[in-house]
Image (cartoon, rainbow over all chains, first blue to last red; front, side, top):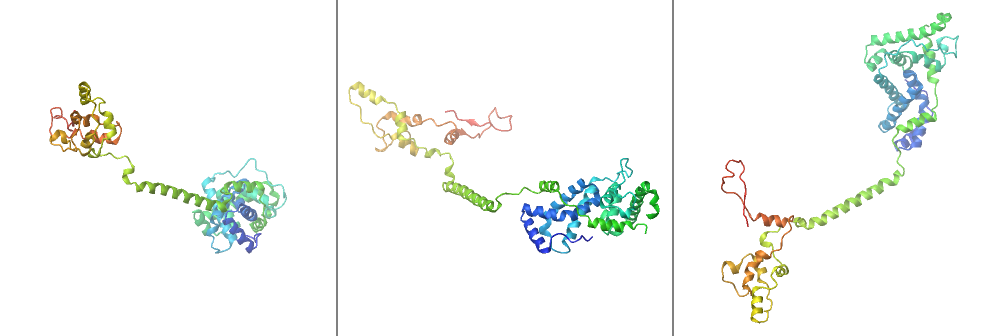
Length: 192
Length: 194
């Protein structure tokens, strides 16, 4: 996955990394605030809940601060960061083992920001809300394939499942998302 | 396109950049290890203190090591035990038999000679008792003094190492099996009763 250009130019980034390696708290805060906007959405895609995502991101940041010295400059720095955050989120989900989260939630409220629009017109917050409704095992595959550009072979290796299972989970997540939408907006079924 | 919304979702998620709040950073800072204040000078100071402590301990033990094992209280062998003349004098009866005899005869008391008992004890020869042939220098001026050394030794402290050695000299290792030990596995040591 390619992150958009980060806020810091390379020179400032090197200075900031060196200061973080010295354990300077101000530099760590600046680093955190600089990369937080691009790293939190990764957690949100896998976890949905913001508070939970921030907790996972902070754990990933802790690993990043400890691993900055080992960064060899091979590959893009933002890609290195994204990999650490994504692995942290996946590890968290494995530990939580929340595969049994129910799809149907009685308290589910369809996003009202775009009530008469198709799925492709949803705002980011609504997308995240929809993703949060998915069971973890479906949301993970959906996020890996749709947002992070994983192939089914990559997903199979990452999650320890077969490629067939990965395809099935992606198909199931799409059906679930569309099912949500059709339940509330049957009139736009043809747009899906 | 049936799943065309996914491309739109990907773009929007890519553009999504929520800012970190103070609460987010506060939670993060709690995870970070506590920052050490004054870290620039703390390491050298700690190093100097550690070096000073090490040198102090080293000097302390080096000074003790010069004294060798004698630094510790070691039992003194019996033949090295020397009863000081002062202690012997104190142990001697103030009015000896000779003094009493002189007093009865009305003669003045003789001058007190250097106590040969100390010499007798120090070299462990007991010349007066064992041989009966005593050189003039060792001849005691008072015959009754010959029994003094054993009596005049000051009582050694019960817990001192010297006492243990002194006491051990009176222990005879068992060489024969007595009736009391005939049925036991370990022979009972026989103690000399003095």
